[in-house]
Length: 264
Length: 336
Image (cartoon, rainbow over all chains, first blue to last red; front, side, top):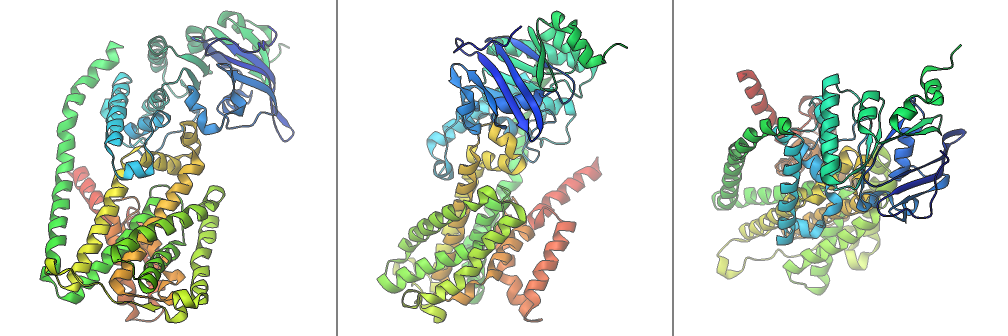
């Protein structure tokens, strides 16, 4: 269970090694390392404040790492500009929704395809034929995605005032519009009812298989984690305290202590 | 999977019909406006035609400022400065080198675009009130600067030019010709902005306005889009300044005080932030409000525009253009 730090894992793998992030005196991540093989679904669990979202923010270059390395598909992820991360095939969702509230659901999804399109200011202002073609293609793809996630009905509604579960799906659709190979989901089940969680888990599994996705999911819903993930990494106070198959991690004494406290 | 797919099939088939129903009144309104715009100069006395022309001139500037404020969520209190620069570029070219009128427009566009791009760099670091203050210095510095280079700008006296005559083949009077020239530029600018907004670029700008962090995660390069939005916005203000020179045939530093920047900002608030008809209403506001309120008191324009901004923010946060939409939404709600 030592952190693996191979030089360059083959095709599409994510390797995190020795990752450390400090905010002033607080060490949010402390020497965290793990590998995600392509096609896997990895659950990232841990009590609040364990550093799960900080880890996501490092992977998407929102935070600078103080130490450590992150390689994705053989490339040094920490040297990539924040806006270029999605171009490598990495998309994410946010814990408390990161939607664009004054845009329609469809336009939110279309922003997801930003990195896959070319139109610049001048070409768009002149509405050149290639811009029209690109726009038609993007719209068709977005509509397909909206249909797949059951969002066609709300496509022209602004992305506010819809049920939370629907907005979560909108955010998922937006991330998928980027055609990611690695998808980072930050608490996708938060705020969903029991039935919705099961439905969402089915949807996610189907999407993963159809689109060949590699998933890292931060989630507190243990039923979801146990049923969906191949591997689980548990963080506590920025340190990795357990890693392994879901059932293994669930019974790990360190994990039990982190969640329930020490037995008296 | 089947369970989620079936219910969406029926609304998908219905969608085109509802969309056509939404588009129709808009299309009718646009057609009526266009016809009215073409007929108006033949029905009105020259002074009214001039007033209408000036509304169109200011509409271009308001359109440009709205691209920045309403669509991208940035702010500028310096757009009067870009308006002035566009006006002076045209005036100096006409005065010094006798450049043909139409060629002053691309020159004004180029100069204001480059300046806008350079001055857009502070927009990367600053936001809100701080950005407002920094951009305001553009407008404040420009007036004394224009007075300095007397040989080129004519100093405080400004430059007096002759208005272009209509080509003989048109059979139009001078005021009508100018009106149509400006209408063409306003129409072109509106189409360009509409194209911009309907595209990937417009969505990226709106994404920056709504949630910068999420926009960046989706691949929007913030620095590039913010500076380019500022440059395009400045360029449209410059275009407005250029055609202003065509119409007025006179520039002087004191016609472009920092009040103009504030009036333009008030124009987008009154007309409606982020709406396509807003700039027209805003243009009318920028032109008519000062002349009308000056009759009451010299200081009245500032006071009235300030009060109007406050009232509109409370009563109609979507501006005059948004009122129609809000009214029809309210009517629909009552029917239900």
